[in-house]
Image 1 (tube, one colour):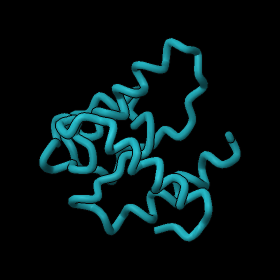
Image 2 (cartoon, helix red, strand yellow; image 1 turned 180 degrees about the vertical axis):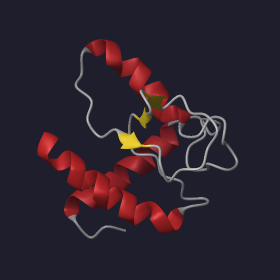
Image 3 (cartoon, helix red, strand yellow; image 1 turned 120 degrees about the vertical axis):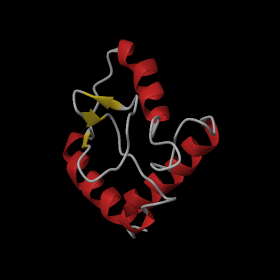
Length: 106
């Protein structure tokens, strides 16, 4: 886990989101849900986009193994996808890189 305050807050937020989203939303498991991987991120995006909110933090799909995802818009994930079932060894690196990328936009 990231040792920064922001990283810790992000991990807490991820835990909350995982409790709220349906279990079959493809969260956290690119192999078991390869056709709906992190679909819950896409559901959140689709529910919010009409509000006019400015979205930051799109993530390139390179390095992820999946077949389809509602969370991919214009070739990128609309948020940070994490697979703590199959790729937990990449989680800290992905969080740190994502936070570094979005920090200037917050």
